[in-house]
Image (cartoon, rainbow, N blue to C red; front, side, top):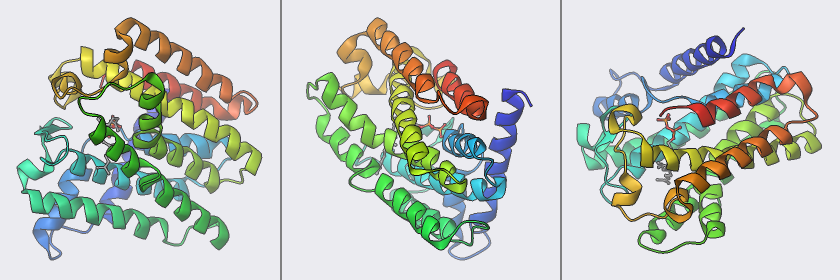
Length: 294
Ligand code: GRG
């Protein structure tokens, strides 16, 4: 199967799996369920489920189990976008080409949407996973919780909010993004590997790959924010500069940020050496992260 066909198949699987775990809007409280579905379905590149499947493919993991692990990460991601867009954080009105959740509904509902999506992620990952031992499943839950919390994504967001208007070094910027964006990317890869029979040594090598891929994702995100249009991105372009946020582009300049992306791309590919052809999808996704237009 060629890469675009595989990617579209996994995106469709993720959409169906999300649709199945999200409560129907006919269930009370209807407005909250409607808003949860609005924020989660019908948009997004589904990079995290794709990474989960690609890492699971290295170990020929069960695809249904990978669907569950992948959407658990995607639910955390969807919650983070809803909260990130709130007036008390980034205060944005456009996400995935449509009004943000609090604009379409209201702030209180958007806050609850994030809360409920976060708990739904753990509810989903704690469902029976055929072929996965209880001990491994506990490791997976622990991994996702750590990646999402104050030592991971939420911590990265706190650093991000504190950094507005500050001058950061490249090292400080990297520390922020390893948490804010990188933690969930890493969780997606490692959860995929946990769905198979990955050894601790293989998990460590994939963790190194994911650290490089997560930073790469962010550097490319900064370049796109500076260079792409709002219409292409489906979210407000140029937001980082407008909000006086430190980014790779404004600290290093566009040319140096692109050079850094090229270096990270190579390091990510190098980290997969040793997995051979089994890591083909991870190699392809790494290239997709760089070559994407939104
Ligand atoms: C509110 C606790 C909390 C955390 C928010 C992830 C995040 C932390 C904020 C999102 C803001 C942002 C622009 C982060 C940079 C990278 C990133 C995560 C971009 C959005 O992810 P994509 O491109 O989005 O995978 P889609 O829409 O394709 O799913």
